[in-house]
Image 1 (cartoon, rainbow, N blue to C red):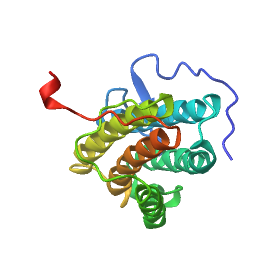
Image 2: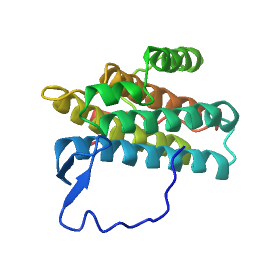
Image 3: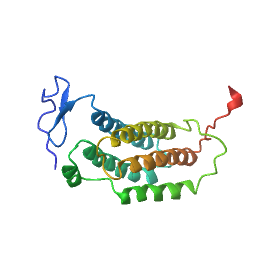
Image 4: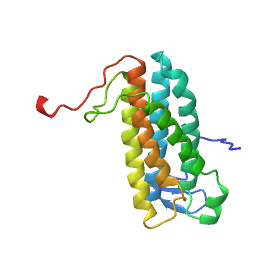
Length: 193
């Protein structure tokens, strides 16, 4: 278990931070950018959860347990991305194939209840749906950063694939939440410009 005795250490005051393996890197290192964006994604998923709860969304009962699971998976992913040492990385909590399969199962179940798309979806459709779209865009950025980092350093076997599937899941969850809450899904209408 993690124990945090002090919130500030002053160890980063010179623009450096420590990875899980103890190595010191600049705070703008690509690895820090990558797992910092995972942290941002996790915070955005927290906004989605709060929105589902406070808006009393009809989608809350089904989606809140999934989002709780996803937030824990994102912490596992962040832990992996916070080390360069592959041996140490292998001992940390991981995102695994089963987590991707879980997302795929969730996507398939909820997408089957939705009408086929006839255009691109514009973010909107109620607060929960809007926050899902925000989370999706943060997830896509995290995925791009992980792909870039993976070209030169280890990122864990399933990291990129997990983020790719999670962004798909967040899209479907947003559509499903809008439908459950009775909001018309805003669609792209190019002629309306």
